[in-house]
Image 1 (cartoon, rainbow, N blue to C red):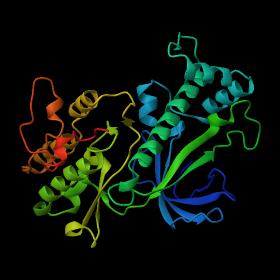
Image 2 (image 1 turned 120 degrees about the vertical axis):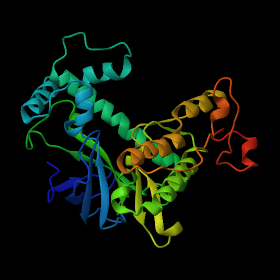
Image 3 (image 1 turned 90 degrees about the vertical axis):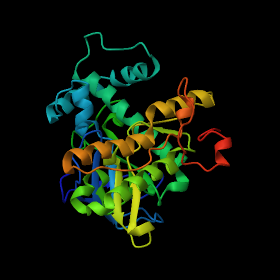
Length: 327
């Protein structure tokens, strides 16, 4: 499944006929989701889409990192058969509802592989919904500092080749997003693609892009790292490089009742800008004996207990009269 050359029939809600894509490449190993470069072969009527895009599917079967953390065995067709039986028995729907509604509902040792697959499906679906919410919250950056989100999609895995799957067909439906294809490389690999003379500039730009995206948003990115920053050559971009942040599945949005102090402290602890720069600083020193020199932003340090800002933030003087990210 999802091998190069494989054709997928996807659904866009409210649109017909289906969106048909062909897997062109799998640029990274599947870990939390299945990410592929796809060619768009046919699309629903009046749905403008490019000929090539990134497809990200939140498929529990191939969420290898989740499966490892939750001590689930690798997925097999035999395991999927047990989930189909659970759904056909009529018990899957009530189990899923209780799992979603009861915070104290947990494995007492009686759960089998089918129950655990239901929970994993729900976890992946939550990640999908979060990523879509983040793309919507960061809409003004789409197509610029983050990829353009074209559409959400769903893919029915058809585990029994057209046979009935019981009372919970959603458990066999994978949610996903189709986003802008960016021909570039991960910033963590830039020592392979770029001359040393450009490294410092790229890191500094990436830190500033991180701040530009996140500082005045209601988004807290809990997975800021160089692997999630793409660098692509673009003659229309500053110094010929476009820097783009990707992967927003591990984010959270600011709660409606979260105060500036609470939000600022969460931002300070996460240190999104610092994480982007400091990881590369350590990586390049270790791999290439290269010393990164840049001013590490302290945008949120005013919220650390007992401290005051000690360095210039990315915000301008007029903006600093209001805390970054405040409503």
